[in-house]
Length: 322
Ligand code: SF4
Ligand code: ZN
Image (tube, rainbow, N blue to C red):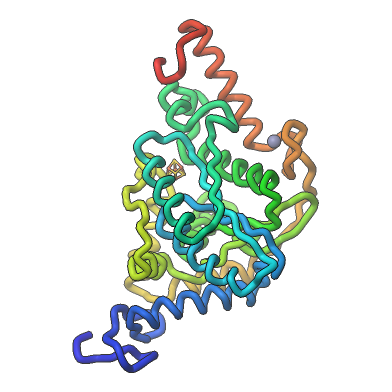
């Protein structure tokens, strides 16, 4: 790109060429374009309201820290809105600790309240406890399944406790298309669009303001904005189905730019949202389509198996020792 100038300001050298639009951006114009696109996404889909108390789910990775930074900027223009950042500690020693530190640091810099909730406190066992004690194997579950269900539930519990009116998650364009494709590879067509505001009986809506931003642009935004983020992947990530789908889609989109946007549009135009009759979980009261929500079901199974294991090895032995 030497000798060429940014297509937007025509002053500075470009740092990024957007393959799907052909536009080259300098660092400043690129960051501005991301922030503008997030604002546009929020208004196009009516994701946020002027008086929302927004819970931002912050893992400490590039996506969620970038989202937090962008929302903190946008929130300044809406004095009746407020932000609170929530991180979930799944109990993966050596991995989550660094992420939590980075999340806390950025929150301090942005002056956003930061709260941490842990699986251990909420459900009685961390993810590594459950894995090492053989519980996951006995239940036939991968770590990501339990992690996903409990993380979702932890965020809902945090949202209620902190009186949030909406939860903002950092799902990017890539994440959303991956999820739709994974549904289809399991033989199901997606039942509802991801990250669009849906209100309902007792539901705190979840929105994804980065839903139209490709993953690689979020990474670049984080680098250019000098946001320190965790680069080490979760030790369980290689096992996941999502990883396979992610790498296929990334290769495909690199060869055929714009494919992810095309897939999102085509899939979402065919989703028929069926408001399944929601009831409330008989244990925790959260909205669910079953009498017992999946999180409470797993919590019961995990604590039952851990209890059996403790009985076998003696009452004072923790799961770490099993
Ligand atoms: Fe949880 Fe799996 Fe993500 Fe690790 S990769 S944080 S186990 S969902
Ligand atoms: Zn429940």
